[in-house]
Length: 282
Length: 167
Image 1 (cartoon, each protein chain N blue to C red):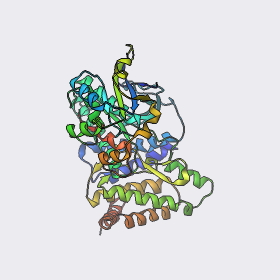
Image 2 (image 1 turned 90 degrees about the horizontal axis):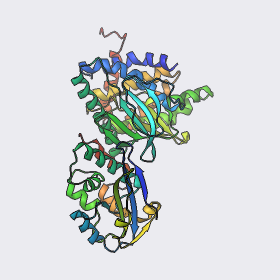
Image 3 (image 1 turned 180 degrees about the vertical axis):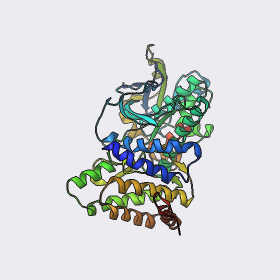
Image 4 (image 1 turned 135 degrees about the vertical axis):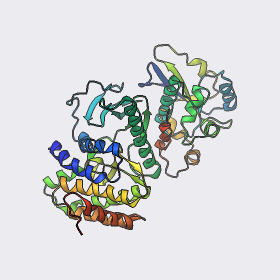
């Protein structure tokens, strides 16, 4: 089910992100988006080493190492680092790329991700803490959010238990406010899906944490923020059924919380009109 | 007598040994000795909140040292520098390194897990009482932490910003 979902989200995300992305990253966005949805699933269960490691990936030398998820962009491991449970995100080398480009790109992506995580920290936006960045292996060692549940899984379980959209409203308000703060810091997540937002236990507290900043960048443009929200909207509506009001509330809270939301919402409307299978014939 | 030694997984076979002292009377002398190189350890002031913070700084220092890319002159000053959220070396050493008036000191040694280490050499020089690392929260100077991290609800992980330096 996760694969089908990722497939559904993938092309749409690539489409939406295209306006902002450069030529070289377009291919990446498609592949990256797909796996980001999967990476969130790491929190579902301790899957251990069920996924096979690619031949060329050297796992980080941490005791108690466990492969949590292998995506197209990176492998995510869990292990003990300096006496704590930590997550190690190792970028997978892509052999089809020219080696010089590969090295530069991996390094840049790793650094960008780490930088985004640190900006969040400094701004008080909940994201995993960065413990160490190894630029040689392009591996980031991060805080492990113990027992966290992806918002995607949470919504699914609420719906399975028969909860209605109303019970999800507090969550959407919190998320809207969080994204407002993120965008006010001019930080674009780049891959907003419900699998990339975690809930710290206990779930009732609605303590949200953003993860997976692999595609993030800094921008003050309303266009980029609008696209960020559009990506989330698409992911939201395609993965979960009957949650339109939930997303509406999210946007309303976003607009109310963010100081610069006016142009962003306007751009969001514009982007919506641009999407796939939309006729731009006036 | 609880000195904690944590192996540095990413830089084997190195490990960091942490010792905590309270009621220290000769902080000034210790600081001078460390600066001269007579005391091969990092002397950390009570501006730290958790030993983990120090381990992360040590891990990065050892890593850079192994690659020959440290920003300061010695491994031990590098550890202290890594504790600071900003890029100014002398400022970091002043705030996170001990000052003459400090009565609590956290000592960090970098050792090899394979070689035996004589802690007596270090502990005998300190005029103070060695205590367990669990007492660190009591000895933390909260005002100092607020000042050095410029935050009111301090998070020890703010200092991890340092780890993003491009090597």
